[in-house]
Amino acid sequence: MIPVTEKFNTAIKQKSRQIFWTGKILLKDETVVEFDDKHILLDSGSITHSCSGTNELEFGTVYASEMGITLKLDKLTTASLENGIVHLFFNIKLNNDSIETIPMGIFEIAEANRTKHFVQLKGYDYMVRFDKTLNFSDTYGSIFELLEFCCKKCHVELGMSKEMVEILPNGKEQVGVYSEHDIESFRDLLHYIGMTTATFATIGRDGKLYLKRYLQDSVWDVREENRYELSISDFKVDYTAIQSTNLKTKISEYYALEVDTGLTMNVGVNPLMQLGLPDKRTRMCQAILQEVTKIKYTPLDSLIVSNPALEVGDLISFYVLNQQYLSIITSIEYTIHGKYRIKSVGKNTLKSANKSKQDKNIQGILQSIESDKLAVNTYTNLSAIKIKQKNQTIIDFEFASNKETDAFFMATILFSQKRKMIKVEEKLEMLDGEERKEITIFRTTVKKQRLHLKYYLNEFPIEQVQPSTECGEGNDLITVMYPLKHLPEKVINHFVVEMSVDDGEIEIPIEGIQAIVVGSGLGGSVPWDGKIKVNETIPLRNLALKSMISFKDNSAELKVDDFPEYKVTDVLRLNSLKLTMMNFDYEEKEVEINAER
Image 1 (cartoon, rainbow, N blue to C red):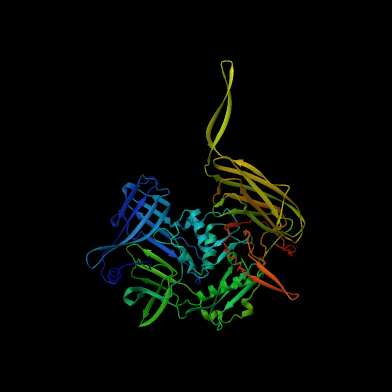
Image 2: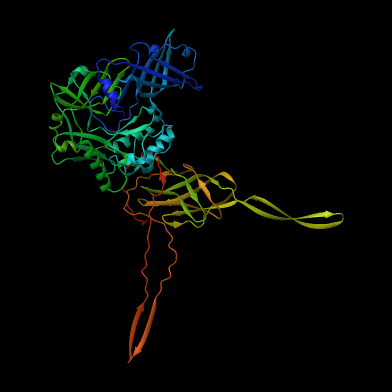
């Protein structure tokens, strides 16, 4: 329920209310066309929201809200409505004769039909902008970073702060996307983010993206005088378990409360929950279980007196003969100047009681590596990188092969250099009559920097190939390639590229690095062995050691003084470079680790 004043809640419950609708249309040429009730054809306007399917409650849903309205506006008869934006507002007159206005959403016009006197508009909220193909297949980061990345790429503002995201279930976890997944669009990625955090994605009335939890406290009471129709179930929805398929083990795992008598929510295969050790996956599944077991409600279908402040995911109370029934709104249809239909879907808990745990622990059929198919492991950076004189890792691949094979590494690196001016001294000779004179000229020019790349394969430097180039001021691009020959079978290969600059500083922007390792029989979903690689330089320490040896009566005495305590403190920082990968049809093979990282 969106925030409203107490005066609004009082006025909306009254039997006699003075309400009206207003709106505006922002056209592509920045023209603003405003309208109100007198322009809206009677019974032609509606707004539909949903956060779940038609059968049961779900996590991770990514539904777009739909708007339809018919207007009589002379200004729209010839105007171009392509890419137009519609803002709708609900207005109510309060007891003090003031007007309170609440937003009803922002919608992009998807379809416009004109008749002789009217224009019929159909639009959707900004959720449709996430129907955009992903340009990478693997990535890594926090939930907040992934949300920011999705919003930036799809031109939708994120309505949540980092703190708001981190209080969600698994909101502080670091997650990654590996090659074996079905993510094709940013909307798919939002689905898995919502599943991971036990939420659903929605576009707020301000046009921003939010992850919303199903509420646990009732926000509105609906009594007999506040509704027209009611169809209510005779059972309550109660979840006591979840089921999630592990992509690595190919097992459908089952997590339940000690007393498991309720429904099981199937969260399916989630590629964001495959990174790290098994304990991490268990911890994340348990967090989802804790959230889903808080959900208890009664499904129903009702036609109620309008309250535009209500939203999907809200928990509301229905009273039937003084008996309270709590219900979660899973879909709601706002009718302009009309009644509101609210639905709450859910499965009967009794139907799940007949299933045994053996039935619930089913085993999935999953494909892995096919050795004869081509695989492309890709790598990009999702944060900017600044490089000064010393070597810094910019590309880090880890992959395995199920047979002895050859592969190729290729990369393009976009970077920019800060302007650094130097004075240059030049000596010139000139003729003064018959006499030859030498003059000295001083001029200022941009200093060119020399970049150096260094390759490492399985921690050993490749000394015979060390690319180097000069770069000038502004943006520049380099392309490199290196063949990886005779890669051994069933061994994890680790390929690293470091960059340094002789003097000055360069910066690689976000997604400035596009790198691939391509070959047959390669796989990039390598299990983590629990090791963390840290590169650091510890300066030389002078340890003071003073000793005195004295001889007395053919004996020696050793005394040690002033031996200072030696301490080293470390700070671990998350490497913001992301490993990405595209995988084409692999055959499942065992990978044996024979090399230490």
